[in-house]
Length: 266
Figure 1: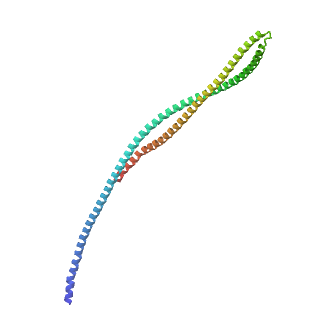
Figure 2: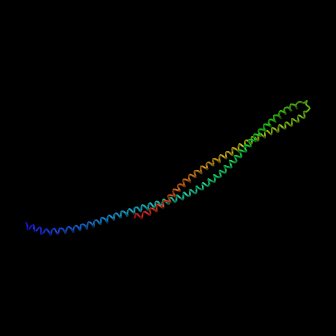
Figure 3: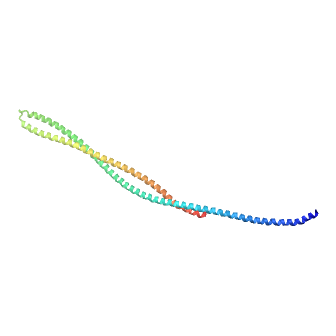
């Protein structure tokens, strides 16, 4: 037992000493392998991350290029629309010029019609005054005619009296009175005809000028409505053109901001 113990102690010491050296070598190898594996994993992770970042950047660049292309097309479309709107604006300006000229001409025409109407009213007033004077004169002539007829009747009665010595004189006076009566009749007929003609003529002229004035007024009103509609359309087109110009002016700045941002992402 003692020899066994001694032998175990003698043999065991080197055994323990050898055991301490072997695990240290294995641990070193394990550490080296672990570090190598860990380095490989880290490298693979970094490589995968770099690839994902690169793919994301490439995808983002493609998206930005597509967006830039779309924006450029929108700019081109806006430019075409601006050209079309400017041309439409020029056409509207020319139309407004024509309408303004027509409106000015109509205003002059209306002023002329108003002056003619005022002159006709003055002439009608004078004609009415002349008609009143003619009517008074007609009444006077009719009164004279009645007196003449009375005198004629009396002379006829006297001329039939054969006993009177002045029969020849009465016949002469009768002839004069007949002539006077005929002249008065003609004068009355002339005055009546003139009165009727004056009334009809001035009534027709007044109705014609009133109709012309009404037509010119309606034409002016319609043209003013059309001019107002054209003004509203031009205001709307100007507003659209203003919005399109703002959009076109802001677009290059957006593109510059986008292009500056892409390299920073890379």
